[in-house]
Length: 357
Image (tube, rainbow, N blue to C red; front, side, top):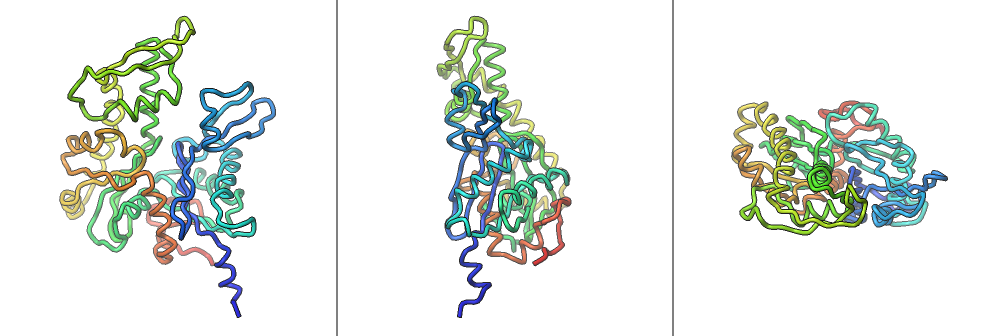
């Protein structure tokens, strides 16, 4: 006879959820990545009704219909708009489920280090409102390390830099623990803002989100380019006349704009490295630094950081998915999950209290 506990396990989804300012990524145990969509909602400003989520909302961005606005309910990796975050998460979780409405969902959700108890509670509440029956919160830096291939049982220290859209986490881990971590609310989205601002102020052209993202990912570089005169055409709206217009821009012109942002990331890493104990510093000197997160895909960022911190810098395989895969691993390491995650809104690092069953 099948036990009640076993029967319940057959209808339980174990989910890992990486909710970022730019994207929400969900992985399910036994199925790997099942959802990867922009963290956006489209809202009717007249009625307040949410009309689209994720990719569908992103397709509207910059070309919204009358009375429709596309907004990001997360800011700095934390909940900025509770009601819309709750609705967005519920939509994504329902979409990611492997079964019908009776499927019970347990989830491990990543969160940046150095967040406040209020920010942690907001995320927990949003998850509970999204009908997730049991929620665990884990520090993103540790999850990214596990997802990038660092063993939770390795006694030697490793350094992982997770560069998201609006938050960069630097975590030094050993033996499944965070030795030292630091985060700053700066990321690849700041490059978008800086590029759009530069083009508007200095070239008189207003460009949209889609154009700015394409300029960053397909043309710009974070490492000093060999050919500063390489150019591309950017289209948008003339600031003065308001009419459609286009300009030619060089990679040499926008490199200083981008370098100003990545230099701040390099300074954050340097600050962490100067605070390490001698044995830990020795391990990092041997192993170098591992980059994860969407920002790790910025052209030349590994070369730039290598020159700045004077250490080897490697980009993890599929860096955007490192955090969510590290979170997913926790379902195979229940004792480690009890050690590193919390269900109550306290400081994340060094959490030792087991969960209630």
